[in-house]
Length: 64
Image (cartoon, rainbow, N blue to C red; front, side, top):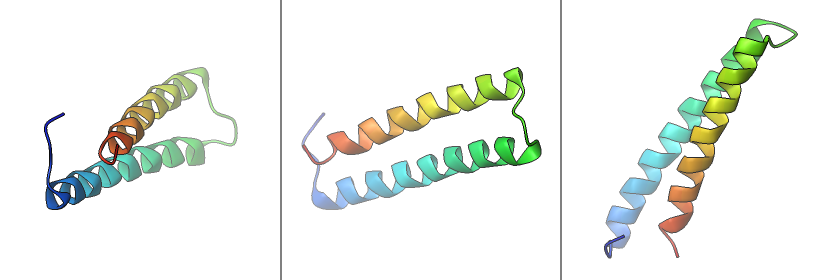
């Protein structure tokens, strides 16, 4: 990753945080639909959790 200014890092951090929160909200909505999560819903939750982990990892790289 190229050298970023603190301002650029802050902008990216805010963008990643927004994306992460959207993913978490999608997961929450899936879980709120039914008491028991279907297999299809669980696959979607797993997919979203992978996306969330990628976003988290990208955020972590900003301040290394």
